[in-house]
Image (cartoon, rainbow over all chains, first blue to last red):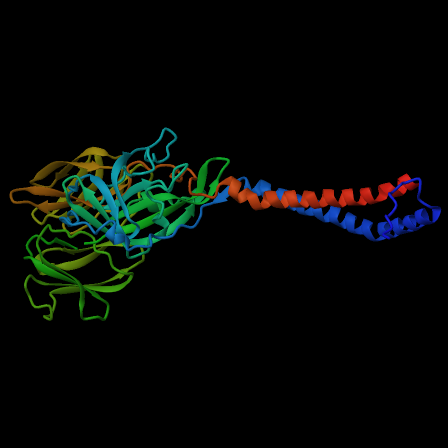
Length: 241
Length: 245
């Protein structure tokens, strides 16, 4: 016959059984209590460290690393055909306004809107993240000087026109079509990222003797408290003659 | 490259890397008053040679000079002086302006008017500057400005548009009938320089705070669970002993 174990605290329990149980409990307490205390301390530690990480992580968010389109992107945006205008002579300022931008290497084809300066004195940005814009205070692309073109890396939900800009490499080409139908071809010389607090103002907006272009977008870490990226990616290119 | 010698016929201009007999750049038929656009070259030592237009590339040059090109520098190599005393002068072109200003210099390339005075809206850019000389740069307020050149027997007036951040060279030349003034852009930048960085992103492709917080959040939860579990375990095992007493 199987003996039922007595229920805990049952009046039928014998003194002997109670004594045995008491001993048993005390032996458990000796072994288990340090384990429980260690679990408590370790748990609090882990929770504390994780909470600190949580507060740091809630302030910032690194952009996911993009990859270049897997297919040959030149099939998506072909190298444009047209008249490649020679650089204008030093004594004139004859190139037409830019109307569109093509970057076959990363599949960019966009019209160019006009950008000015905000009331705060910063560079205006395009009103939509799907197009890039030319800063009208900068030289026209193909004139002596650095023409400035800015575009968004992303919107609140999706990729922007310059999402892949940081993946461009020196030697790749950028094309600008102008209002008179002519094209200016630029070869990329430098691709760099700068914290916005150390933006290279004179390199971007300062005088240059030859025709150059600068493509600007955002990058680096996104600051969720201010709603802005902390860095700018800048692509420098020179007119191909 | 500039041809600023009024009585010298057209020339071909060659640019060689120092010690290399293959020309890096050749400009054909450069005539009086011609100024080529800038050519981009690697920093280093170069030789500039001038030959009569159409002369063989291997022939002895009429003139040559060496030029040390510094990284980020800009230079104008000008053939100046009368044909008899023609020389190549290397000018270092400035590439920065004081904030909101334009820079202007004068090259006096008129042989007919030996000395000229050049004024820009009343500011003296060059006073009695002699043939084949170059003034230093003067910082001026930008705008649509009037240039007035006076020599002993001729004068010329023209307007030039100087944008902030631009650097110009005014070349005084012997024109077909009288003095002429060429306005060359040495360099230009943005007219108004915006402040700081550019706000070109809204974070749609940045990691969401939720995504970044998930591992940290679950670690907090796991830690708390462990702590609570440990505490409960300790107290629950103690309770029957108290009851038994």
